[in-house]
Length: 309
Picture 1 (tube, rainbow, N blue to C red):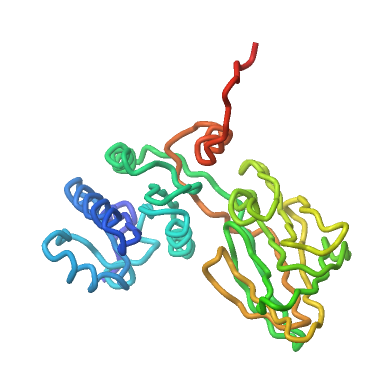
Picture 2: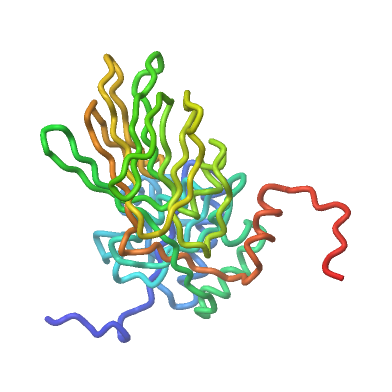
């Protein structure tokens, strides 16, 4: 039997949540139930399905489908995430193979990637049901890890790739280069290769600049570097950033991709970051300037502002 045409398939929305928290469970059940009542098939991750059914019993709607069992990610029109930035990054990871947009509702603390807060959930659901949202494309990174023996590993990141020392007692010796030309070498705790989206995350904590998401650029931010010239740099979006790990006894390192996926590194390894050909799609409900989001999320003081005259 041939598959039904895309426009004849039922609408499906994947709901990703932090089901270990009671607040997230309540919000998730509300979303799943309301989607089902409006004729949209709610989908959850198959990995939490059995546990969730045992825990929630009859609260889980019967129409719920399981991702990877009843449908594929490409069958979903949207991934709706209920949680903080960590849960949203998990939703982005799930959505990427199907190139599906992700919409976040913040149940965490800062929630910089989230589009709305918990108390606006009914409004968000109505907009989602009506398909009344824009899709914003965010620059992502492609990473290549090449060991001394020539073996290669690849990965990607939305926020940042962080090269970090694997031994707390040892400093990491690195050489950084841009577009194949060496720029500097120094000892440090790590080096961040970041996107503008990630400039308000780990990069910000490490002293990197905040870069508006509309700016297409790549960032390199040293972490606790022992050098006179080891400042954050911002380069063109088509530049190639690289970090080479120089030999030092007991100084193996680790590469973290968005703080979620890990690659062990040995001395002599070269980590290269380039702009990914596949951006990350974020669903947006609000058209407020990034400045407004920055002030709200970081609770920046703006007392005394009078505005343009």
